[in-house]
Image 1 (cartoon, rainbow, N blue to C red):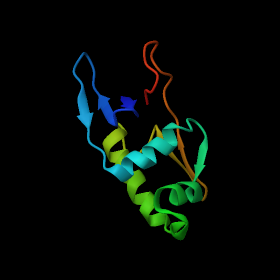
Image 2: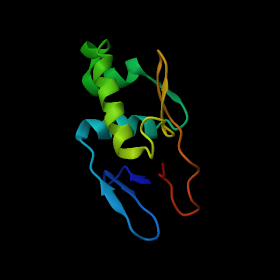
Image 3: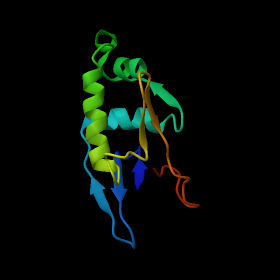
Image 4: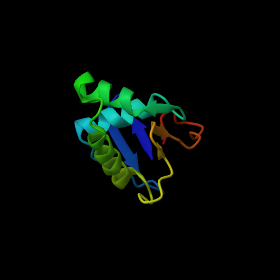
Amino acid sequence: MTVDLATHTVTRGRFGERDTIRLTPTEWHVLELLIRNPGKLVTRQTMLTDIWGSDHVADTGYLRLYIAQLRKKLEPEPGEPRYLLTEAGMGYRLCPDPPPDNATDSV
């Protein structure tokens, strides 16, 4: 899977065939926060404030919903996430694979 933040595209595929994955603007915002902090914990409070504003820091249901939607679209096994990990009670972490030699933003 390749994520291009500049063009807001996510593609995946093998053997020369690539499919584009459509994301909503909010899904993009969530994914971008995680991509810009690979391997690091991004707290729920940070994500909620950055995406919806400080009035929504307690609205964790929004965040759970969007993480679930992203997992359905991006994870090979959404029920057993490999990339979008939950840190219980704290936030989320993106665990990217090492990028191929010729790519910079692979997930």
